[in-house]
Image (cartoon, rainbow, N blue to C red; front, side):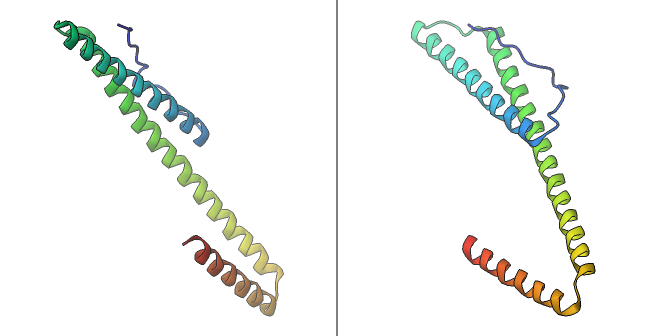
Amino acid sequence: MTELHCPSATAALPDTAQGCRARLAALHSEIAAIRVQIATADLRRQAHKQALDAQWFHRAKTALRLKKEEAARVSARLSELTAKARSSRERFKDALIEAMRAECDDARWAALLQRARRLHEHQEVSHG
């Protein structure tokens, strides 16, 4: 059987959303590979009517558990990073509105708001 190695549970999390997505993809692949190894070992055991190598099975199940735990941590980090990006985007929108409001008189501002509402309503109809 293939020897299973697991990175430390304290491994550093990616700093970017793209890094999190890449790590999650790798983890899902590794998890699938471990599951295949466990299933293959079980099929061989059944076919040859032998006992399962308990130490190997324990290592494989531990590796699977650790990979799943790491995937959960990376997924939480991805959620955190995307939430920060959204809040950053919201702050930018607020700053843009503040800058535009300072540049527009009341009539121009009212016209821009009306146009924005129409665009928003059109987007809601198109997407939903």
